[in-house]
Amino acid sequence: MKLIKPYLTSILLVIILLGAILVISKRFYKRFDLTSDKRYTLSATTLDLLSKVEEPIYIKVLLKGNIPPEYKSLQTETLQLLEEYRAINDYISFEFVNPLEGKNPDDQIQKLNYEGFTPLLITSSQEGKTSESYIFPWVIIEKGEKQQRVSLIRNKIGATTQEKIAFSVQNLEYAFSDALYKLLIQKEKKIAVLKSNGTLPDIQIADFLRTEQEYYHIAPFTLDSVATNPEKTLKQLSEYQLCIIAKPTEKFSDEQKQVLDQYIMKGGRVLWLLDQTSISLEDLYKQEGHTMAMPIDLNLGDMLFKYGVRLNYDLLNDWYFTQVVVAQGNGSQTQYIPIPWVYSPMILSSNNHLITKNLDGIRLQFVSSIDTLSNNVKKTVLLTSSPISKQEGIPKEIFLDFPEKTMEGYNKGNFPVAVLLEGNFSSAFKNRIKPIEQLKSEDESIVTKMIVISDGDIIKNDIQQGEPIELGYDKWTNQFFDNKIFLQNCVNYLLDDTNFLQLRNKKISLPFLDKKFIKEEKVYWEVIAFVTPMILLLLIIIIFRIWYRKEYS
Image (cartoon, rainbow, N blue to C red):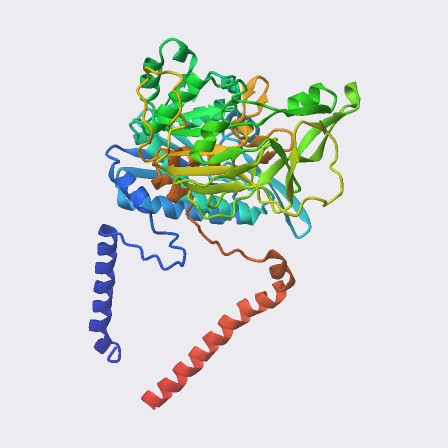
């Protein structure tokens, strides 16, 4: 007791200090982010968003239960992110739930799948045993009667499980903040979708429009009234900040072009999705695997030339291709076989622009090359074909077959297929006789922007059982492409909504264990893990005994 008494005061002080630290830490939350990629530092966009939350928001994460080890990091990162959200705003509350707990697994899986919460089937092997399990990487965010769903998994072409998880973790803050934004947003900006001149029907662009309707007011617009009342048409069009022109197939009259031109002169933005050839996969399927690729004259060449780009009458043949599916056999013997398709390139952007940074592959169909021309407008090439691609002139007969095994002519490549133009544009009708004399015309625009993409099918979603499916998903090959995200980025940039673009481009690096190395070195590390603590404990005991004998001998 005599030896212990001198230390009692110190022990009590330590206990009191620890208690005080515990109380203070509960009242004042602070985490120090020492990661190199600032993984746990919320962006200014998210902080601004959280400051606007003034009603209770409840977040239910379905990622709980028997979670495979490789998905634990996704669960942990989600938890840590939500803790940050809750620390910033007390109105945020969350919980992790197991959607299969206490219920018949088969019935519950079927029910959740029907409601749109697609499960993820995990097949894992350990010590020669294979097991299967389902997890639901989904989140439900509720604010009053409003609800948003968030998928925690981002698909990536050709990615391993670890790469997919890293990609998904990288997307977490954007996914949650985007969902909160949709719950809080007061829509202000308006987008016109051109529905004249043979543009794509609603069902073929339904998924993209459905997505954009959560952020903007979207309405169809036609140029049919230009012939009778051009002033009214221009006035109505000028109420929209952006006009999307998706794969027109009918020629634009000079009067229609003048209205579009003056819309741009007044600061209107345009997303041009244009085809230079009249060919589609449907044509090939209907005509037994061969058809002619013919040029389309939309009468837009002089207009775009004045703005600073020229769409060429050609087809890009690219060895960095995706696949199409062809049917072989008849009746019950029919088989659907994927074949490489050089006229359907997969585009991977190599530049660091806000629109294209960190994007996965984008799939195009029958795309043409774009030339940029010299004028005062700033031009940024967003997408190009691969280094092993070539131009083919049209008209040209196209056969649905395996490509020729040749590299002849593929020595140039990197042809632009999407270009951003920014600045003050000169009117296409400057120093020309105006088709509509009574229409008040400006020769120079205020500062504005447009994006020209030489493929109308980039916005086209597949249809399954009469319903549109997600843009970028190929129902035949079960692959996902980043067409939707790229077009979302284009719209955000054209409408100056760049805060979420920066958030979407956040880069995070996750360290993963090397499973092969662990298996090979398993015994060694087990011995180290067992023996090392024993040796350390033994050393501490020896040192303590030596010190004790020396102190009290």
